[in-house]
Length: 335
Ligand code: NDP
Image (cartoon, rainbow, N blue to C red; front, side, top):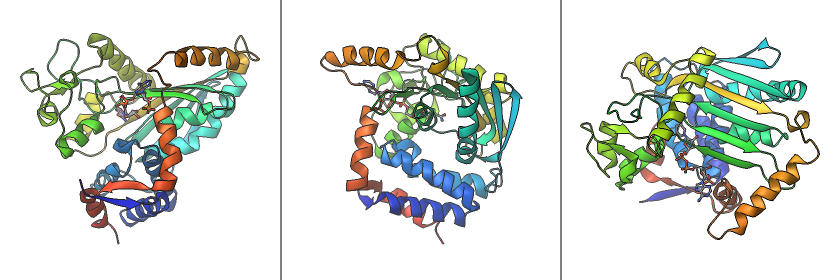
């Protein structure tokens, strides 16, 4: 595949300029570009520049508010809501960070309902940022119906990711962030774009047939990881990121989109826990390290997020490789 090498600064400038030129005010353009380049830096390509033309199409369709002014509201002593004003998620997520940290430190636990925003992307940027403040955090979101319930053939659940982060002493946080489907949607789309096969567990064709062709899965339905267990986690995420916070189920988000194939509108639930207010404020960090050391004693193991953290060190030096087709698509949207 032919690629274009860019520095992170060049990628950020390109994303910010493109978003500004296509309907974002400076605050929204900066917050979105920050998130996309953060994903590129950690080599999480399905949430990087790959999404830029799609984000532009969402604004051009008139559905997504590029001038969104998210508003924070305290719903209960330990529950905060941020209304994203129909914009993309990053600005609302950015604005929500400090209030959630303060609320969790006061109460020991705090929940954040992010609502009325488009395309809540990866979970790790938020949970990792809370763990950098010394908190544990869990985040979930739903999307569009891509995943069949266990035993079914019709897509009903989103690929519904869940992220978790745990603070560490003198080390970056322990973070995992995974879809409840066998494969994330973006990864499936990238496999289709690049002509790669996918594992047979990734999904089924329209009649329930087995396939390793990502294009056939895109016509049919994805599957939960680990069969019915992943499907139940996807169902839990639907409930927490939908009905609990007054937001769409994945099927409702698709109805709202009405076939435009724009970014999904929906919500995210984040729960932050302050270990200083639980049972072992002085010992929990060392106790967690004992677990990580035991894991890493075993050959073949690594901690989740280690791949990302390694990439994070490398990309500022070597730059990022953008497929030339994507680069050209973005250039066509530039001033
Ligand atoms: P992966 O399967 O690539 O990785 C899941 C997690 O497992 C990561 O934290 C990863 O860490 C870790 N991991 C991978 N291999 C190992 C290993 N051998 N040992 C220990 N840990 C390991 O992620 P997904 O494809 O499920 O999801 C990709 C992204 O897509 C996520 O950020 C997710 O939030 C996002 N997503 C968003 C959706 C949405 O609707 N907004 C829907 C679905 C997914 P590492 O990163 O270091 O490899």
